[in-house]
Length: 281
Image (cartoon, rainbow, N blue to C red):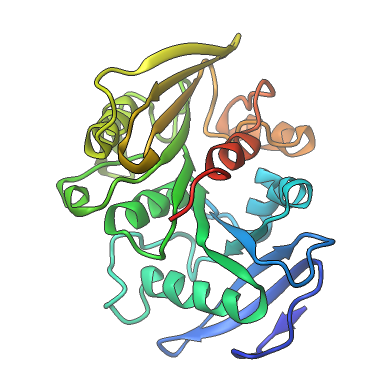
């Protein structure tokens, strides 16, 4: 279904719908999933950004957020990049930027679904994870917490952001975005642990991460005590590839051949939601 309705259009039914909108003269689109049995309720919103070369539909399938949303009662939005990937560095003031798209997208979602503006969250993988960290750094979109897989960063520009609760996942065998840092498409990337420690320090968390084994192949490094509940959780997947933890086996079997092993020990989507649920803005 393609919708070109504007503000004031009829509320969306349960299920997944494709919508289109124009931002600075460009046609943009996204998928939105509404859980059943929540007509008229003001619902939380989880936005999830696909990786480079992927699509919004593939991101929904990869993450399984539709099923998590149906169990817990929140709206899922999967935006579609205009090209192969996201331009996560341009500000909303730049016409046609993806940041401007996110701002317009949130407004469009609120025109067709009753969303709780204090409970909106951003997630993504790889290039989509970079979008998540850029949104947190620039504090764009009014998100209350952030979740990402395989693509963290912290720059001096992030110093101006408010404390941001973040949950993050990275595999030790990720060859595309190495966990220990390196160059990704010619761009230098810091080690994931350094970036997450920087966010923890920025948030005012207690010094030093608490380490715990979540599963035989998953270690959690958690920084607690962040200002306003802005804690940082960092899951390291031993032998994990450039993959979404807990992706359905039928999808993981395909992606594993190209991007490395997908752990079945945890579900990133469920953990993200558990992290998000008590947090509001």
